[in-house]
Image 1 (cartoon, rainbow, N blue to C red):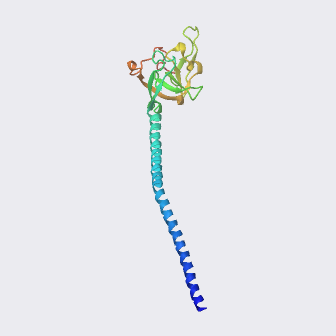
Image 2: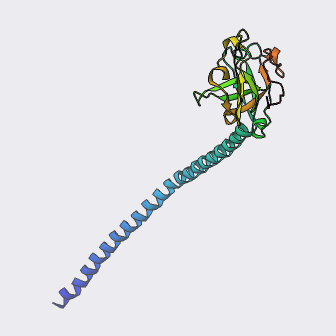
Image 3: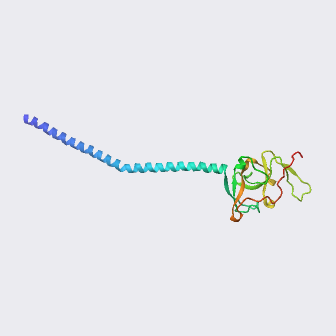
Length: 216
């Protein structure tokens, strides 16, 4: 009986040892698998970090250059492709001009200037016309052949715009004076076509109002 009792602890120890060995193998296997997974995921994490860094950098540069472009567009000027016959022969269809913004912001728009303005009918459409009169100017709205002439005074904060091609232009003669705030810029240079490169000529219509005494 003593022999049996002495043999049981060995068996128990043997069983315990086997279980511990199996447990250790499981733990070691799990650690090995975790290390392998971590090792495999390390390049993916690094690639993700690099991609995220590049994306954030691209977004940052986009915002930065977008702000610069907005400031340039708002305060310096823009290139405009003109269409329509209303400004012929000064500006013809498909001419490219540069419209500067500083004159508009500094309230330096003068009579005789060609301007780009928002249409009083459609804010999404721009018009290209010549400034014929400023606030306070007396404008003749009758045709040259009319016996009795009618006139209108340009109200405060408004301008009178007309196309150089009077026979084919929709302008202030049809929709009246427009608010100064609708002016986007002053056309100062023609860029295209190359043979027409340079500053723009004076109005051929001779309708620009001369400086006058508004007391009449």
